[in-house]
Length: 354
Ligand code: NAD
Ligand code: LMR
Image (cartoon, rainbow, N blue to C red; front, side):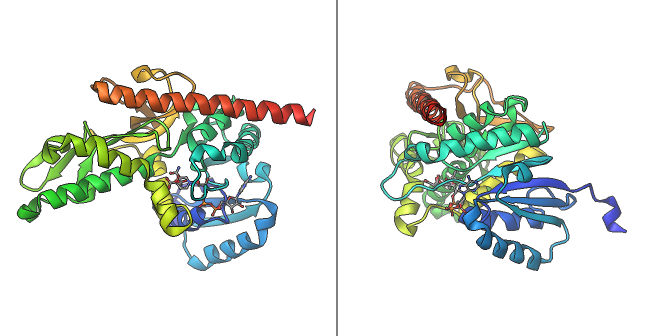
């Protein structure tokens, strides 16, 4: 009996479960492409009360997938019920930005959600829960959430910059493809571009850094992307700005923020956290800073990390050019400002309640 060898189901929470990102993410989870084909899951779907009817429709579709790894599905508007004994959580539920807004404009609307959910995680979740914050402003929301769940290690809270990493990887592969088109067989596939780094905030101050990236070219082995591209003006100019502004470009075109690509990135992030990264290949995640690379502590900053046994380690010892240093400082400063603003919002809300 095949079922007998399967693990016990784990509880996986998706917040904002009636929204756009969840709609793409839930299929990946139910199909086993995140926690693996041998891990049954119970889904805990959290959204706000007015969305319960819509959420019921999502539950019907999940049933209709007829996927054997998907066990119990529980829609709820109660965070305490959703987070009970949860082993992993995708915190997606939040207001998305509209055209003309910066992500930090969402602070006032969204910070309180992450305070409340931090408190619910503290009370109800497993202490080894892995929390991935997707809802914006993702880095600062993750910091707030961790702050209100002090008994869960702060390493268990991460923010998503994987979408930025995927965007950067795709842009580099495409550039190399155009550049090498006279030698078609040398064109790298997107997954052959490795170790591009997203530093800092998931915002327009992020620093997409190709200085350490390599590409596996058929017949040539591993080459440095910066040498293959051989155009620093492009890497430090057009490439950087395109990735920084990609979210806004999608909103301008779609009139809604990216969802399919965001859900795919969330799956990538959690899968790597769960199963580990490949040797010599790092990924970018927003994690609580330990002061590495001179970044202030106690902000959630995106660093390159290696992951083993479900624990990440920030990649150390990378050379930081003067250009990179100035970019790291800008995005760190923005995160410190967001942190101050978030604390102010929470403090004034608390005093209004009293
Ligand atoms: P959406 O509006 O389609 O869905 C959001 C859902 O969250 C809605 O169903 C809403 O009712 C729900 N929600 C609101 N408050 C909630 C609460 N307190 N508890 C539970 N659910 C709640 O939005 P979306 O397109 O799915 O985007 C969700 C978030 O993800 C936004 O903040 C967006 O900016 C962000 N995002 C982040 C990245 C990233 O790379 N980090 C990428 C894309 C989008
Ligand atoms: C994105 O990067 O696409 C999301 O964070 C949505 C946004 O506001 O840009």
